[in-house]
Length: 349
Figure 1: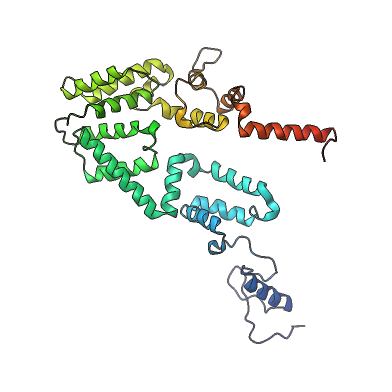
Figure 2: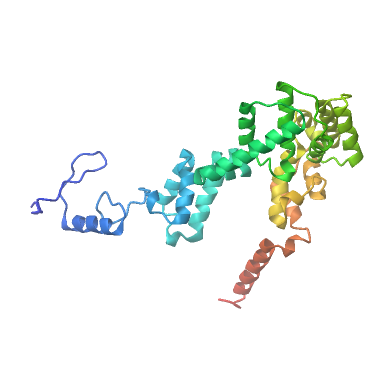
């Protein structure tokens, strides 16, 4: 028997878009509840639809996250999947959030973008005006550096390099050598004028590349090389190649990469940031000549072949360091272990 329903009730449609059936009293109640509760329930079954993500109703913090996530289809897909399976529901607790974070960190987007690129992406999508200011500051810094070396650059070159400056962390003290790399590329393609006489600029350029490759020279060395460049006895490219050749001798496993323009600090970044995280110290304070870093990079296997340490092995070595036991991470680990042992003996509930 067909139930007599109010004429104003309209047929609902299933996922194919075809009319389905008229609403039962339970469906009318579910419809009203979804309208009052501010959620979607397309089937009127009384259960909110998790796979219908309404970013406008998210909390302020989650709306900030959604601006980032919606800017990339892959990230949005991961987010919507976790909304659908309830990862953000209170009953899922921290495990649900952790599962979401793990999927984000395993994504190709996360793997293909370093910490600086991810931070720049977040800034650009959530605060475009601040991102524009960062680009403007980077452009000004690059223009001033080029001027100090007597290099003329085009607006197109500056625009491209300014974006890299922001997205690759060139403003960090330990990555300032990337500015010098960019300026050297400018020098190859732009019209050079006579050096402006800024001895310090050339000396700092050489020092940055040496430091980025684990070399320690005297101030006199850098000043002498800078002076030779200014007098035309050599050029900056040759001076930098001399430094790279010395670095190649110090790091044989990476010799070809160093000669090709890569810097050891970039190659060691995984170890550096792992060490900073484990020992809770500033990554910028970690030198390539640190015993842990040097050992990890120059490790050899039983056959004497180059075999850099895995990050897992590296972390185990760091946890033997006296500094580790004083970190928050170590204290939490110890506290957790102590609690478990006490529970085993029935000393705590």
